[in-house]
Structures are given as C-alpha cells and as structure tokens.
Amino acid sequence: MTFLPIVARELRVASRRRATYWSRFVMALATIVVGLFVFVDARHNAPHEQGMELFGVLGILAFIYCLGAGIRSTADCLSEEKRDGTLGLLFLTDLKGYDVIIGKLVATSLNSLYGLLAIFPVLAIPLLMGGITNGEFWRLTLVLANIFLFSLALGMFVSSISKYPRRAVAASTTLMLIIAVGLPILQDWFSYFNKYPQLNSVVRTIIPETAFALIGDKDYATGMKDFWWSVGVIQGLCWVLLALASFIVPRSWQDKPAGAKAVRWRERWHLWSYGDAAERQLFRKRLLDINAFFWLAGRARLKPTHVWVALFCLGCLWTWGAVKNPSEWMNGGIYFITAMVVNTMLKIWVASEAGRRLGEDRKIGALELLLSTPLTVPDILRGQFLALKRQFFWPLMFALVLEGVFLLAALRASHESGEPVAIVCCGVSIMVMLVADIFALSALGMWTSLTAKNPNRTTGMTVRRILVLPWAVIVAVCILGSLLLPLIDALKPIGDLLDRGDTAWKAFLALYLFMGIAADLWFGLTAWRRLQAEFREVAVQRFVAAPASFWSRLWRRRSEPATNLPPVVAS
Image (cartoon, rainbow, N blue to C red; front, side, top):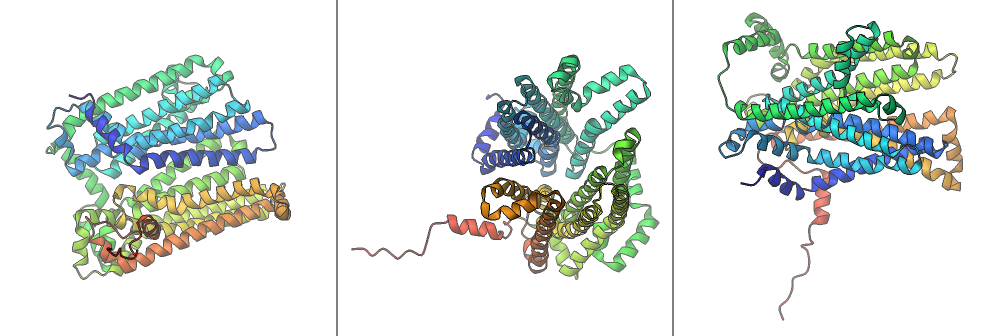
C-alpha cells in the first residue's frame, strides 16, 4: 500500500488547480506591494534603517497570517466531511487516522503554505540592504513555520471534535485568541503583581509571541534559552494536537446517540438560547406579526447578546491597556486603532450573519419550500434585514457613540498640535464608512450566500470585495503616486501638494472615502438589484452553477474560440 495515499492524491489534484498557482502569485504580489509601501514611507532614511523597518513590518504581518492559517484552512475540513457523510467511507478501507489527518492537512493548507513560502524571498531583501543579519532572518523563518504548523494543528484538532462549521470556526478562533492574546495578558498580570513565578515561566513558553520577540540578535543573546524553549514547546503541542486528532477522527464520525449528560446540557443551552415554551410562544407571535422570515432568521434570542459580549471583551482589553500604560494610551492614535478594530469586528460579523440563514436554507432545499408559500421575495429580504437590525442595531449605535466620545477626547488633546480639522474629518469619515459598509455588506452577503459554491466561504468573498479591495487600490495608488510624481515634471505641483504635511491627509482621506463609497455602491447596489430580480432563479439552483458575473462572462468570451468563421467550401 502506498505510504500516505491521501497525501499523494491531494498533491496530484492540487497540481491541476489554477488556485494553487494563483495563491502564490497573489501572496507574493501583496507582499511586494506592502514592501514598496514601507520603502516609500521610509525613503528618506538610511538603507539599513529602511531594511530594519521593512523586515519588522513584513514580519508582523506574516506572523498574523500564520496565526490565522488554521482558522482559514483546517477548522472546518473534517467537520464538513462529517456533515456530508463521506468521512466514514474513508474508514471502510485500510486507511488509518493519521492517513486522513495528514491527507486533509496537506489538501486544505497547501495554498496557505505556498502563500507563506512566497513571503520569504521578500523577507530576505533587508539582508541585501544591511538592515538585518542572517541569524535574524532564519530565526524569523523558523518562528513563522512553527506558528504556521501550530495554527493548522489547532484547527485540525477542533475540526475533529466538531460537526458544525460556525462552531468549529468559533472554537478555533477563541482558542487562538486565548493563546495569542489571553495568555500574554495573564503573563503580564503575573509579572505586574510578582506572583506565581514558576507558572509565569510556563505560560511564557506557550505564548507564540515569546520566540517572535527574541528574533533580534541582542534579544536572542540574552534570551536564547527562552527562544528555544518556546519553539520546542509549540512544536511539541503541534504533534500532540495532530496525534489527538488522529486518535479522535476514526471514533467521531459515527452518529451516536447522545448520553444523558449531553442531552441535559443541550436542553439547558436550548432553554437559555430560546427560552421556555411560554417565552418562545410570545416571542414567536411578536416576530410573526411583523414578518414570518424575521422569526425564522432571528428566533435565537441570544444573538444580540453575543455581540455585546464581544464588545465587553474588547472593552476589558482596552481598559487593561489604559491601566498598564495610562500616559501612552490616552492619545489620538490609540483612539483611532480602537475605532478601527471595533468597526472591523462589526463589519466582518455582519458579513458572516447576512447570508447565513439564506445559505443554509438553500443548501438543504428549504428555500424552495419557502418560495412555495405566500411569502414573497420582498418579504424574505425584509425579514433578513430585520433580523440583522435586531442583532446589530444597538451595538452599531454604541460604536458610533463611542467613536464620537473618542473624537471629542482627541479634539481636547489636539489643541497643542493644532490639527482639529484633520481629526474631525477623519473621525466623521470612519463613522460614515461604518454605516455605508454595513449596508453594502448586508446586501452583498445575502447575494453571495445564494450564489457561492461553498457556503462556508461567503464571508471571505464578501469581505474581500467591500473591505479589502478599496484598501488594495488605495495602497497601490499611494505607491504609484510616490514613485511616479518625482519623475514627472508636469505633475510637480501635485507632488508638492502631496508632500506638504498639512494637505497630504486631505488627499488620502478623499481617496479613502471615494474608494469606500464606490465599492459600497457598486457591489451593494448590484447585489440588491440582483436579489430582487434573480432571487427565485438562484434559490432553486442547488446543483446548477449560479449565474456568472460580468467578469466571468467577459473572460469566457475572450477565451472561447471564434465560432462565426465563414464555412469552408469543399473544392
């Protein structure tokens, strides 16, 4: 029998997929763009300083990329097989648990691995600039590969014990946040109060940031032992998680009856989420009187509470930072970062919830049954929007009020700097884009859930179009402008305008608003128009490809051979 047969098959399949090659190209291009942006920003510094700044920025971004690799790649790979009923078929053969685990690990993480490998050549550029040493580069490479494998192993372990996609992704995200954010806070708390020194040292070895912070030559010279202990412990955890997943997966695919204890906990959670019979009846009557689909999409009473709990956790984290560094925390930069974090969390959450109900109903065929009832398409769309409003309206209002408070605090602290106009314009723009993006993400999320082949990827597709694409264009325009303006004499007045510190923010803010509003209008309005016009058509196409987009049709038209050639006349 072939050693690791699933791995061999998945590698052959991946070699024939276009995405395998495009992922490397896109990641390398994104890394080059970020590197150009950093280089342009630090072009007035010495070469070795430019190299150090480039190495630091790319290293941090690559570290974040590795932390999220497991959530993106492996968190739902085994649970999806369980839902489809195909995991048990693998164990009817001679395959072992480790065959399935390593095979799925390779199959799901290959594109992410190629993306990480595409980053390394750009990370080596500071070596030529004299900003870093060989040791620093190879230590960063080792740390990134180690964290990457740990993230994949954590996602694989969670997927082996999960069945539902949202729970698997939520559990992987929570565990990674506890390890990457919660443990550093706990370690700082131990150090601040000088308690539990032995437990503090144990926690320090588990934290991924420990080895990352000791990459520099000076830090490595004083903390060599901590560096290798951290790398070794995390590597050991990787193999422990993979071994546990290999042991669990052959025993977790069967549909076994739940035990008495599990049934009791399930009933308690259902009672907590939906209430008792009397509460459910009152809640059902109140929502059904408004809209039937509103009750179907918003009957989980605790959904708004989940958003408030997430905001409370962010508030606790912000308070911890304010208590730890009060002099450095109360400034406009921290206010801006906090507002962007809150806004990004709300936007991604809205994108994930907008089409969840529609996507699940379409996958199981329930949407066809709904369309056979007196419910109309406008009723369904209105009910989905009401469910989103019930879950996110008051957290959105809280975020806007909080950002208004931050704006006033930044204005109060800006009297000495003399930049109140810039602060007001920036704060108002962030709040305007929050509301505009929420509406666009809601419409696009619903349309994407009806047309995507894989419902689990609808959130990523929606976020890339509304949030990522405008920033990619903004960064590209800034880089091209900084590189080309000094070379073109005809545009020198514009270059002088952009180089002036008092007006540069105006150009950037105008570009930010223009690109953000343009993306919201284009994708949001297009999705809303197609929802109203093609909802019934795409809702019943569970096994038929969804209508192609404009760009897909254009590419297909260009790639197909011409068929209108004159006929060949036989001689």
